[in-house]
Length: 305
Length: 274
Image 1 (cartoon, rainbow over the protein chains, first blue to last red):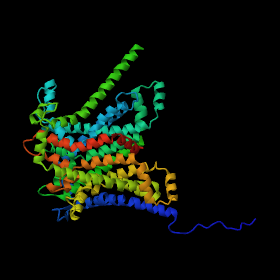
Image 2 (image 1 turned 135 degrees about the vertical axis):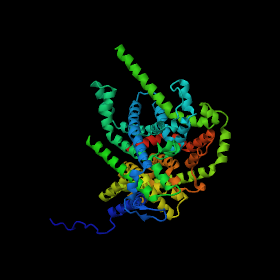
Image 3 (image 1 turned 90 degrees about the vertical axis):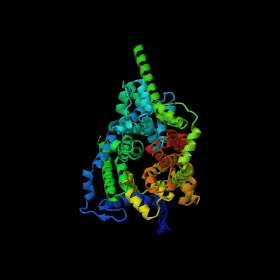
Image 4 (image 1 turned 180 degrees about the vertical axis):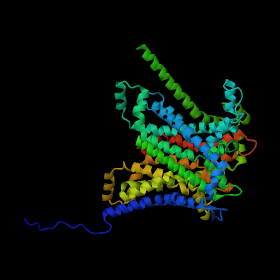
């Protein structure tokens, strides 16, 4: 049988439906993409170039040797101290905070818990405070003649008040306490959200098999939450490495730079009587490398297990 | 059986005790800050836990010491602008990446995600030089421009665009709406909780922003609330009543927004997590 009408040919227009739609999509994402390139990627390149220069901000010239700023960092006692401080915060505060967040999330994930919403709101409330605000509050609480000392000496835990903010050890302690207070609720919310998608029947089956709460946590919850734990770990690491507000407002860099963070020191280098943008850029590039390396390590570890 | 019941009761008690202590510790500093703004310095240092009558006195001193109105105005203006513009730019980008996705767009998205790794400090110096040259120091635009497009928000909106039904889009196209109209008239109204959560996060971040404003705002005219509060601890003799009044004032907007949008915020984070 002959088929009189041939199959209709597809119209060859450049602006087909798909093309138009795809073009619209590109148009939609361009402003944001452009901004990220201009304000994140391009400055990174600039930062690297600036880190090879020296001189006043308006008259930067390349160093001789090129990596002079980087050499200087190694013998700069304050820089080394700031790195040590920042890493101390990272290693101590982040694990404590994440463990607490998991514990709270587990406890609050229990449908039978009374006042569940109230507890959740309370523990999450610190996240509504600004970093400057809570740094000031903690600074006021922990001053030598402040409330914490008053309460602790009255109860009898302390025989004499601790000079929190002027002691290299205790000043760091106050910062860590502040960070845990401020950010545990934030991570807890992430874990709670993740737990919503874990089927309750898995826990039921485990309980029938005789697993108690603790075993359930270790063998069910944590493995299932692994991606989220990884995300929060990376975000927390990122955030702690860039710590600034607390160092400036809570301890002012601490007694003799004993609590100063890398970002704080970089800021000081940029805005003093003799600003040294090249050196500041070099230090900030080092932070970038640290963040990248630690994120890569954490991602690898997270994926392997 | 009785033993089992007893140990269960004990563990339940411990659990509630633990949560009560944690909640108390979480709330106490804020409560104490608010109470302290009503007290004077001696009472604060003495550990007084209930409000006294010095609120007006502290507020008066605060307004006398610093230009609070200007800081409030700057903070509100820059924050609101940042929220509106950031949501506009990021949501449409997330929508574009998801609804029209092809492998090229996905690749671009992958590159953008790398930007999340860039610590702000690393770009601080070049950004400052850039804005300096462009004459944008001390300006509202300079304040919020770098933070308008964040990979986090783009990813967040892209995830929520996944739940936007394709049938709705098709039907709208048949009805003659162009792509942009579909976004404005259909996507935005449908995704109100998402926008609410994103608005909350952005508001809090913008309001509490400290490092970048400190860098770019060089004149006292251009100060923001966090910077103002930070300056309160500057002198040798600190009036803690004034400091706490400032802290409370600075925290009030974010705490209020937090309580209003709390529900949608926790739901919104759930969306981002998925």
